[in-house]
Length: 232
Image (cartoon, rainbow, N blue to C red; front, side, top):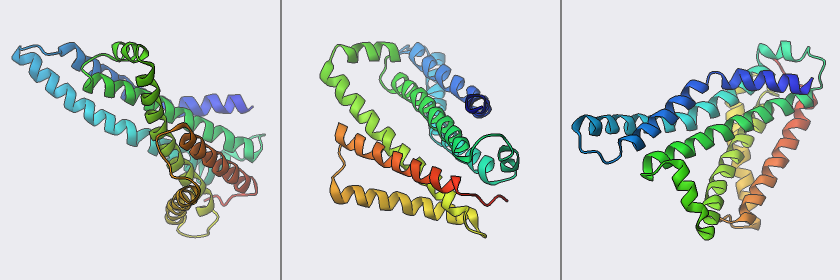
């Protein structure tokens, strides 16, 4: 039942994002294709595609993040929750499916964002860029650590907001407001606690610490949600 729910949720979330993914990738490769050609028409096309790629990359950060957050909110706490809570599945398992789908969707969007970023700003297509990095072990190690550092920071923000969403919906009124406030507070508290014991930097230890904090927030959110919810 879990995997059926997971596949349904994954398709439901990503079918609306496919057009964005394809558009951004195509535009970024058009920028590469145009290259440094001196033809006025091609220069204009490259400029337009570059600008559109920047807009697309912005959307790749905002839209998937917002979509998965709202999906969890609507499925677990709004009208759609009545349907999901009638399924022969435990609340904790339902929570597992929603969070896993959200994390995978964000990872996909970040990978596509990375491809577009490399295509537009490196002057090389992503395949050539990766091939060159593989020839330089130190370079690839530093780049991977840097990318993972940024990714886990976004993951901490996401898990803080999801945990805040669960606590906010324990309230009887102004649930969205309390969800946002709790999410921000949880993120600030976690960062302060981490900073009290360890100064985060671009290294493997920092990545591991933030991932550990993600796991703790996940377990906390799952436990609280399993105890019961207020559905609008």
